[in-house]
Image 1 (spheres, rainbow, N blue to C red):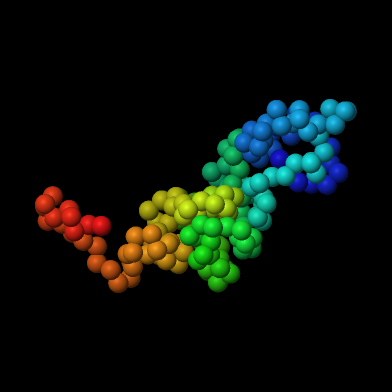
Image 2 (cartoon, rainbow, N blue to C red):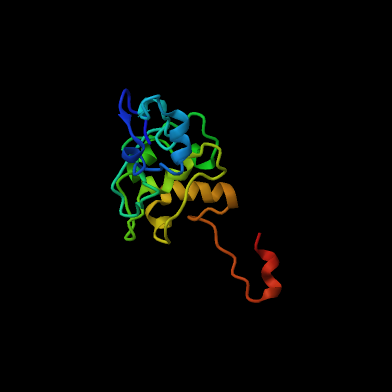
Length: 168
């Protein structure tokens, strides 16, 4: 369901739209519908699009969930995640068109943090390759959380279980 002015739809026309079930499904439709049994889409606020982006033809889409693509930097003014501190226009422009061999996009990386402004971290990694391709955003986040600078720190390598105290 998305916010579109003055378009009325029936339940049959709307129940295949992205996130329909996540946004309340039939119960929400019944709550918001007009006397004629139709719903004005302008009454529906899609929290997935609140900060920007658009639904896309992502290969990972399912009937119940559609991924969002961000062609421009999402609005992060009220976000508190660690990622929102480091995601700026330069990082966004550098990474926005990158994708892993498993089709994990930069929009996929930031989606959860954009639609949930109070997440503590605000990014996801879809695969191991994500850490290399999207390192410009991941590296400062990793450093802030773990105190580990991937460019200069040496990862401890305990030689036995007795040495595990060396790992923080």
